[in-house]
Length: 366
Image (tube, rainbow, N blue to C red):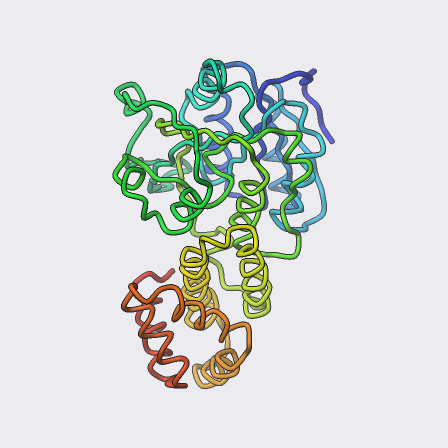
């Protein structure tokens, strides 16, 4: 563990997990933290078992950033990396950043100003808006183009909103269908990004180590369920610029078992939000579409199409898979295309479903 300076009593702990990330992306992320207009932060970087070459790059870049701690550990996944960082967080608040994303320069200041307003002191979570971006790595430089930038924050007259209905919030986090929020510049993420959370509560609500993807959504549902006061701020506080090498874009050999684990975890969250079954069914079906891209139709899957289709039929017959499509039929009757696929699955028209998932994967593929 490397500690650059005294980082006690910092306002916000910024947690960034890293695993074999290209240098241009590392530099973009770290520089966005370094350029924060507010000085009240510490940066905790967790290297989750990167190569020796990558470790040297991480240490070198972080040595030039004040109030930074670097933790090196064996590879255990992004959840274990975040949980390890949480142990060392000395800030009263925590915000999470993915290494292939960046922060607008005023993110920490926006959070602080929001909490300093009368009546907001006892909040457990602040949710801000994210903007999407694209990147081109050219001549060793990471060139990012954002859909919206922080200049939009200066022209925003909308007031801070205190969330009164958690069910409405969860419905939007999973489906983006609440009009007064979906019509704004930017979006809410269904993970920890673009959020400020109270450290003492995070230490009691760790990320699930048994999930390899979608662990972010499961964690968020748990945290929202425990939060007593949640603020929604109108500004953009996060730049989502995910890289092709991230976990939800790579072929995963164990993806089928991971999918079963995710289905079980999300189904259990219905107990926390019984009025959000439609949204949870929507999310579970979204994971079916993600699974098709990560495994069944991913270009890096070494198996033949015949072998994969045979696995697909076995997967269709699993009770966890049937549970997803039963939920779709029960709760997504107004989502025509998904409902038709769920009905085809119930009628065992597996080849029809196969063709639908294949076309979807090609359209939204890797």
